[in-house]
View 1 (spheres, helix red, strand yellow):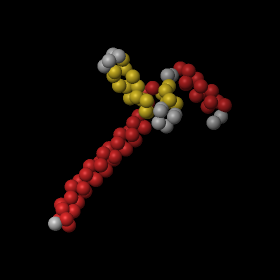
View 2 (tube, protein in one colour):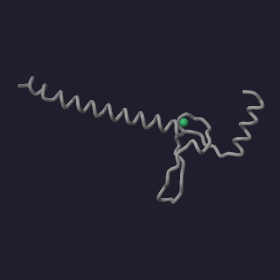
View 3 (cartoon, helix red, strand yellow):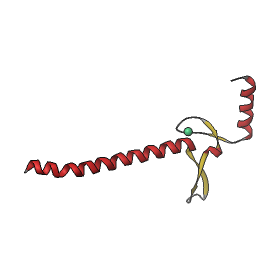
Length: 87
Ligand SMILES: [Zn+2]
């Protein structure tokens, strides 16, 4: 990064509000974070994960739940066989 780019970044940080993502630890503009409404405090907050990380996080959660569902489905299929063996 050149001095010029560095200065540009510092200026951008001063003029635009940024937030550090809790997941990728990158400083990003607030637009990069999803707003979410806190009904108890009647205020809008930004998620602690940036949009990119939220996407990845949701994908992982989906896969995790999907795997769990598959495992349960497998157990369900496995079960009658175990019973048969026991008989
Ligand atoms: Zn992030």
